[in-house]
Amino acid sequence: AGGAVYWGHGLYTAPGPSKRDVTLVIERGAGAAAIARVLQQAGVIAEPLVFRLAARLQSAKRPLKAGEYAFPAGITAKGALELLQSGKTVVRRLTVAEGLTWAEVRALLERAEGLTGRVELRPAEGTLLPETYHYSWGDRREQLARRMQDAMSGLLAKLWAARGADLPLATPTEALILASIVEKETAIAAERPRIAAVFLNRLKKNMRLQSDPTVVYGMTGGNAPLGRALTRADLKAATPYNAYMID
Image (cartoon, rainbow, N blue to C red):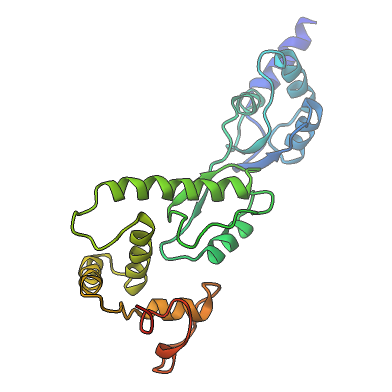
């Protein structure tokens, strides 16, 4: 018995056979035996029996947790077990760039590896905050979309409360719309205050905004880029968003 324990402990604490980092997804409901087989097949551990026995001995106090894990090269069976007990899963990132429409953000969510479920949310255009979001394997697309919406609501409320007293804007929504138009007018951040000032002056004088991005959005519905330069005829297009034609 003593020899068996000594042998098992040696295997448990010895470096594993993997020569490179290995990323694996441990499915929900998988038991110690199934996890041990997955680790052995991926080359993370050499002896599944030792891992399985150690996991069962500790299962009451420290159960193994599902998720996506990155196992460093040469990790021991003990290290692999502790990693699965810790729940420190791989942190994935999804970046929503400035100026994307809801259709484009939804496409990003649908393509993001590791996310699950459908997106039932139908947010108003521009109400998702452009940012880099962290998520884990198995998180739901719907939840991530709502996080984007909540982040925008929080930021907009904060900025609206600190707004200038002379702005010709009645609501936070009007501020968000104008900010979206300014953002689409130029990709250079340093130019945006000047462009915003031009639009604010036009609003104060009851002039039309005459903004090209509003024409493009009216023609595409935000579903895809226009793919060409605007023409004079486009500027007269009858859409609900054409700020050349609508006060």
